[in-house]
Amino acid sequence: QVQLVESGGGLVQAGGSLRPSCATSGGTFSRYVMGWFRQAPGKEREFVAVISWNGGNTAYADSVKGRFTVSRDNAKNTVYLQMNSLKPEDTAVYYCAASLRNRWYPASPDEFAYWGQGTQVTVSS
Image 1 (cartoon, rainbow, N blue to C red):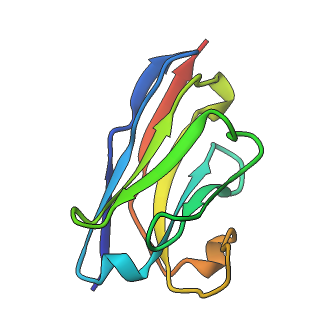
Image 2 (image 1 turned 180 degrees about the vertical axis):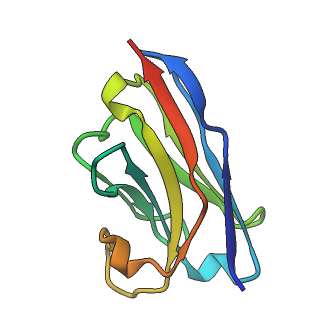
């Protein structure tokens, strides 16, 4: 049973930074493409970023490109999302997810088999 646990969310002022992390267990972490999604109240879950199994490839939503950086440490079975220059519109629950799809890059929630419980990120103006 693959388990993903996010941490590192919180409340920050606009322009600030946060670095959520996602620790995994119960599977072979290095096999998974790892993604980050977010969901704001009343909105659908949306793609934020994705990183390939070895960290060599990344992709981002246009809304976060240049501000967010996804990384992973396969020795620690953990993926990170460095979020800089945060804006109030970044406020959402952030989820990490794991995909075994071979296609690069998976960006739909349907392409991810395992999900964490989410961590709240709130950006005040």
